[in-house]
Length: 268
Image (cartoon, rainbow, N blue to C red):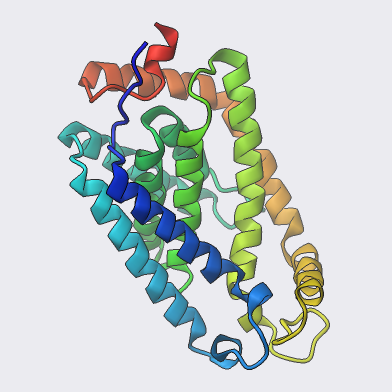
């Protein structure tokens, strides 16, 4: 059995770009837990904008690298269609008790079409939804990168799974991503939200353990319920809609005659 080619090719240069983007993103999210006393970021009110611009630049480089791999025109159309569906769903659900159905299609799209497609789908979907809802701001690159990681991770899950096992794994993955997405977003704005002096505030120069404790208390008291609701909704959504959606996406891919779809040969 030959190894299937992904819809969005991920060559060596793109792998390097993805690795660099992931490293830069991890640092951008976690710097409050790593920075020392006297750090410029810890005291600079423009830090969210600076970090957002850096992440936006990194994302642009990765998306260009993905495009240079030679994306099939029909794959571009599928990418636009799924991104449009997700962008429309997001304003219909986001902000309602943590319900965010947009991640359903990012997970399922990444699962069917591969890691590169999932990465691009996550970024484009969040960007398109921000245009629809007026949600442009320094937080957007963080949201785009987190969604891209979710789509890429779905594409990296073992390809041979099918049936109930596949749905169970995807439901668990989506639930985990839904919860961690909320924690990541909390971490991106926590240092700038409360101001100094509260028990939940970011403490510049404090130890990792102390700031981690403060952050955990902050997350528990502000967003834990929403994050858990998001995780449950995504797991239930994948369980109910996953099988039919996966079948539809795979059937569409075969009819459109994309480059070989990741995982399709597992059934042959």
